[in-house]
Image (cartoon, rainbow, N blue to C red; front, side, top):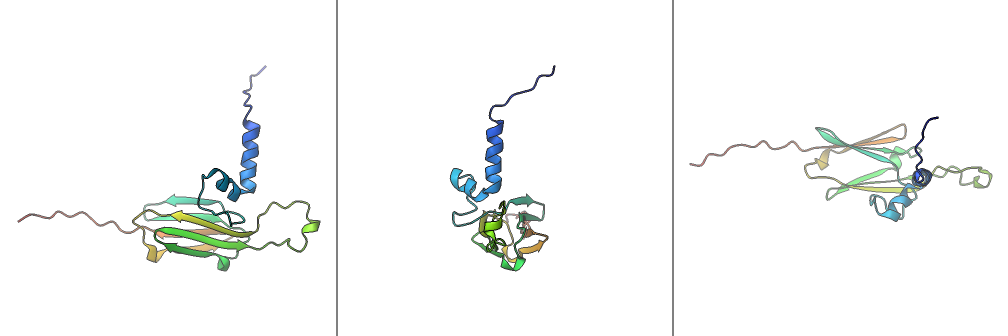
Length: 148
């Protein structure tokens, strides 16, 4: 006979994870853990933020969103991603058996640290993945000043 560990909260944690996966914008709005989306968004794309030696890289999953319908702005150290995914089932929703894919607008905001080059931010979209590259400013080398 083998012993198994019983975790009475595992089912509740799985349920909460599924709810957050299906409605990510609501999960952040309810518990306040993620202020990068606002209540007027219909959905929030999942995002990875990576710091590399030369840049910051923001990777967002935006399947079904045309790259030309994504608006990226930066102001006062805040990067904003806005866009919209069209509802392909709008006319035939009555015949749908299951609808899990969110549609409508999304809105995400990210505060960026000092030392970024806002003039050279680039973005590209490929196969439903948006990559925003934010280069770092080259650090000024310390120099010694002699007192005369």
